[in-house]
Length: 61
Image (cartoon, rainbow, N blue to C red; front, side, top):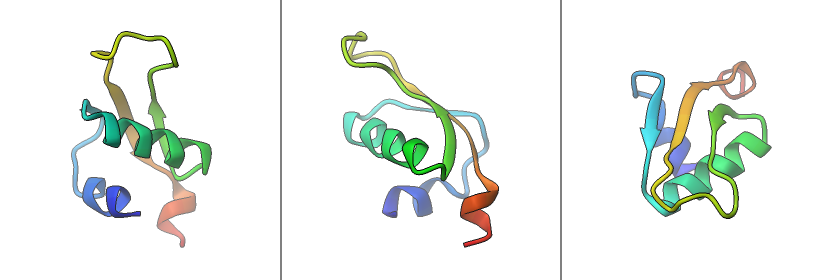
């Protein structure tokens, strides 16, 4: 949830490159709290996650 709080002021879309942030983005996508494209297992370690938006589900919570 710290990651979600940290990104809420960002201008979307934006890239996330730190491995821990990419993992956090993947968890939030799975929970339906953000829309993002995250790299798949086996992708280059240099492929970023791209966060498109925070979902309405998050904003109504």
